[in-house]
Length: 319
Ligand SMILES: Cc1cc2nc3c(=O)[nH]c(=O)nc-3n(C[C@H](O)[C@H](O)[C@H](O)COP(=O)(O)OP(=O)(O)OC[C@H]3O[C@@H](n4cnc5c(N)ncnc54)[C@H](O)[C@@H]3O)c2cc1C
Image 1 (cartoon, rainbow, N blue to C red):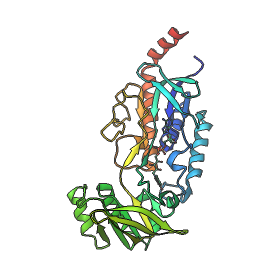
Image 2: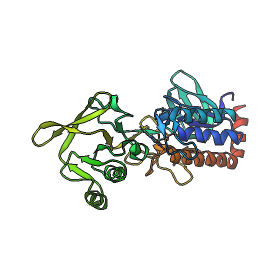
Image 3: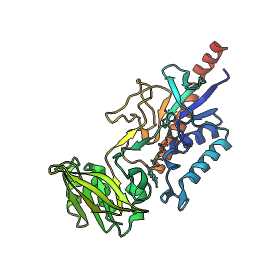
């Protein structure tokens, strides 16, 4: 079988590239197929300051370095491709691309990532990455001594608001309801922090500025009153969307559409693993994606070793 791989990795972000580094270094024939920009969210991040050992590094540089490392071990990478359908139930799994090509693999790793939910209001795209962020851990430091707003009322929003007070001079939480959805402990902690202010029953309508963000246009929902609120930065925590909508329906997902895995990154389907931002987990960072990718890669190697005889048999049938 010409296009039989040991491992097919779907998704070429930090998690997928790491999995590819491990499996190809173990001399397994590995294919990474990636739909968008190789490197995923990492590539689209301007400055990464918290990846250990690199110092400040441009996202695309870190991504290139992971890509080159994977290729140096013989990993095949196909980017800008779209998967049309999957057959992941059989021992030999198949993925079919939209361009008509098909590839088979003894194991599959889903590392399809995800994206923060956007507000989709004017100015959001313009200031994304400069004045607007979806990650306080990543970008909080850039707002030292500045006034910022946090949009959202769940655990992430309130916890990130508290963490932002280490940097920002004032943090205003803007929430659409008159109560929070976060745990009481998170609400208490935020309320007891003197740097945090609250604007309830209010939604952002636009981000406005010139070169930099200057204010957020807010609407007070009960009265319909729209006004400008000065802010040099905005952090949006209104949920996260994993890229799992097009994955096979047989894969177990939780209610947030995140892939359920065990601590070896095994999914409910034998030989199918998942890693990175698309799985059910608490913290989404490059380091955690890299860790998941490592585990998924190693588990995949173990799975193939343990099932060697089954695959030898399949090869005879196909031949
Ligand atoms: C604005 C921003 C800034 C951030 N800054 C930092 C930071 O400074 N430090 C830090 O540690 N973390 C940061 N993060 C978080 C970090 O980037 C992510 O947690 C990490 O990159 C996730 O990696 P991943 O491989 O799991 O997923 P992704 O990076 O999302 O990669 C998934 C890849 O899979 C592809 N894909 C999706 N669906 C399919 C499909 N069906 N078929 C094939 N390919 C598919 C996507 O195109 C993408 O290339 C930031 C995130 C954002 C949004």
